[in-house]
Length: 301
Length: 301
Image (tube, rainbow over all chains, first blue to last red; front, side):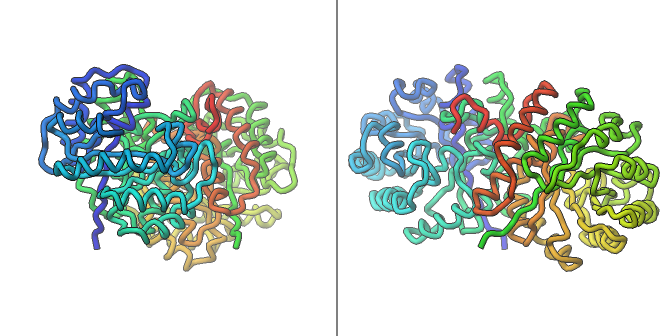
C-alpha cells in the first residue's frame, strides 16, 4: 500500500551555486549536517567544478573535509573530470560522484564547452575511477523537458544521453527540467519512454519551479512510476536564465505533498524546515518555498 | 482531443478582500475590465457583504455600477442575503450572484454566525430571487478539503452542502480548499463522490496555494474529470489563517499549466499578466505568482 519516496537534497550544491551572497565554509558544513539530521538519504554537499565556473563553491574540498558521516545519508559532490575526481576521493567523506551533461548540443556546449559526443569519454573516466574505488556514480541530464537555447527537446536526445550514462555505470540518472519548462502531460510521455531503458528506481526527477508547475510535474512523474525526486530545501537557488524567478523545487514541498498523499519519505519535515531557516538567515533573504512561509507565519495554519 | 478548461477569476473579490492596501474604486473597475479583456469567461468583481466584515470591498455598488459589459465575460459578485441581493440587482452590470457557506459547522459559524442548517434558507432566498430575475446563481462551499478549526472534513459534510446548493438552483458549485490543506489523492477521492451528485461541469475547483500544492491539486482534479477552476490573478490575496503565506492559486499559473498540456482555456495569457502587473503596482507589492515572476524577469526564460 505505502510506496516509498526517496528525496535527493541538492540545495548545498545546486541551490547555493546560484546564490549571490557569500556563505562561509563552516556555515555550509553546518547546513549539510542539518540536512543529514533531517534524515535525507542523499545530500549533494558541494562541487569540484573549477572555481572559475562556480565561484560560490570554490571551497568544495574544505566543505567536504569538514563533514561528519551520518548513517543513512549519502554525501555527494559534482565531479566534472578526473582532476575533480581526485579532490572528491581525497575528501574521505563523500559517497556519490555526480557527473553531468545536457540533452541538447547547445546547452552542453554552453555549460561544458564540448559536444555531447566529446563529453561521454570524460564522464566515463570519472565513473570508471569512482566505481573502481567503491563509490557510486550518479549522472545528471540537463534540459530534458525543454532548452533555453533549442526549445523543444526530442525524447530521442534524452534517451541517447540517459542510455549512455547507464551503460557507463551510473547507478542513478537525474532527469533535469533545468528551466522549468515541463508540463505534466509531457512528463508522462517522456517517462514512458525513459522507463523502457531501466526501472523507474534508476531515475530521479529534478524539477524546477520557475513557472510554479514543479509539484504538478512531480505528481505526474509519480503517477508514471517515478519514486525519486531532487529538491533544494526552501527552494534555495534561483534560475540563471530568469533572474528573480524561482529555481529548484523546494524539498519540503515535495516531502509535504507526498506525505499528505500517504507515502513514506522517511524525512523529518520539522528538521528540514529548520535547515531551510538556517540557510535563509545565513543568506539574509526570504526563500521562495510557500510551504516554508505557511509554516513560519505568525499564526501557523 | 482538446478538452476545454474554464477559468473563474476571483481576484477582484477573493484576492482584494485580503489585501491591506487601500485600492481606489476606479482602480478596481479598471482591474476588472483588464481581466475581462484577457477573455476570462467569469470575473468576480466585488461583494455585497457588509463593509463591517469586508471593509476592502465597501465600494461594491460603485465598482459594479462602473463596469462596462463585455461579450463573453460574466460579471459576478458575492451576495450574502436579500439586502445584498437588492444592491446586486440595482447595479445593472452583474450576471452571477454568488452565495457562500462552509462544509463545517465551526467555520460556518465563524464566517456567517449561523449553523449550516440555518444558512440554507438565507441562501435559498437569494438564489430564488436571482433566478426569478433571470440571473445565474453560484454556490461557494468553503473548507471542503480541511478546516482550520475542525481539521479533517468528512466527505458526507461536503456532499450535504453541495447537494442542498444544487437543489436550491445554483448552476455552479465552487469547492474551496480555503486553507490549502488538500492533497492530490484526497482530491480524487472527494471528487469521485461529488461528481455522483451532478456532472463535473457543474463544479469549479477553488484551490489555495498556501503550501505550494495548488497546481498539483488542480492536475489531480483535472484527472478526476474537473474542467472548471477558480483562480486569483497574480496569486493576489493572502491567507487570513496564516499571515505572510500565499492564498488563492494564480489564475495565470492555471492557464499556463493547462495550455502547456494542450488544453484550451480561451484566455489571453499576456493580457492576464498585464492585469496582474497593473494590480501589483496599485498595491505597491510583489505578488506571489512564480509564473508572473518568470515572465517579468530581466532575461525572460
